[in-house]
Length: 565
Image: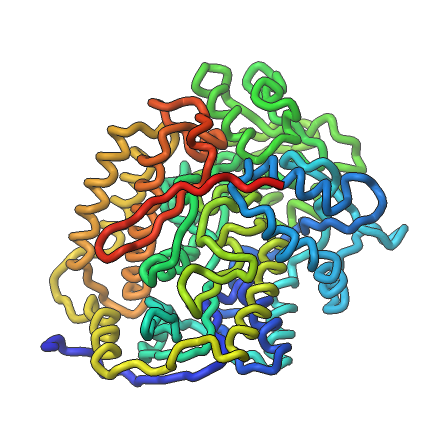
């Protein structure tokens, strides 16, 4: 090739298990694989101590503890999870990847020094319920140090960290994933990782839709999660599942973090401009219904002229307010109380106005959208496993950690029995990969990534957001195709911009899968998650999962019947 490449150092790493994504799922996968005595490389495009959606802390840990009540059992959880996901998750998976591990996971967190028991008087867990749960599944805890604690443990047992490496593509040999390539976002070094098993665990997908604050990085989950796992897996031939379902939540006006679980879990209300608790019109459990019900109800109250809508905590007893304000909101949302102070809002006596957030993947706590995996967290491509919020398994922090542990164990077993492909790549292919990575740095003229990324969010918000129609989705398909053509004209002035260019590549692919699935699914389901104005009702013939995979230059879609208990 005639492209002049920058003078960069080339580094090649060979390992047993490669994990891409250093969040909670990836770190737990690394710990699990390392326990099997294998060499493990954990790669993240940022640091690892504070990476992922749980980087700054978390205040709730979904757990089934079998403590006595009928709701605190495996059977009750599975019934609830089946209702929540409407059977669009393989119901054999929660038992294998979550229920068999969750009690041990809670104990492990306590062994590592995470304060799970906030009820010091009785040395017990404080538990609350929300989102349609049959009981109080969420352990309220102080998770501000969870991520650095488990990261330190991974380092202690010998997991090798590779920080600030942006992985751009997976490597295949004879149809089997054998590693990945990427670059150091600070130094520019070109990295090749060769592995006997590879796990992708880069989390959910943000920055696809405009938020009401007008700032793409003011997102309610990590804005740096750009769908890398989903995009890389899809390019490698893996199946994606139910990508059309997009998650919305409620946030205080122009504030990034939602606070929804903490507020409704403690008994807070959501009221309209008339002071009415309106959610019972949309679900029999009202504020205790599934997450999707709350933005769905707010949408219709606003649309029909009964807005604005508010969080109402004025009725809560002082003990509940103290717990909410001192233990929940400051942990999961560090600046929440600062926000209230600056707004002049005292939640003890004032209403707090809410808005519908921007959309993101996966769809919600049920995690029905993402990479399709088996009971072993294996994708449909040999040698490639997936964990956490990028998969269709079990959502939430605790779910991601349990799924990560499962993926790490299974990937290690796969590597140990020699299941991977030949760890070899030709010099010609590596040169092609290198050219593709650094080419935007060589362009003197071209488009800036912000121009295309802003346009991408505009297209997704207008045509693939709330209230989809066939005509709008067809328009989005055409606009996204134009953006794909323009992608080849992007230039980067430095390594930071080069990282953003490659993030945009993944975002664009994920946007296309969402649009393709939304156009195919001619019904509405899960409220705003997939609301087709031209097909406003759920339809029995569409009570199924929709899988997508690449076949040559085409994309094949197939329907898969819902799972049963």
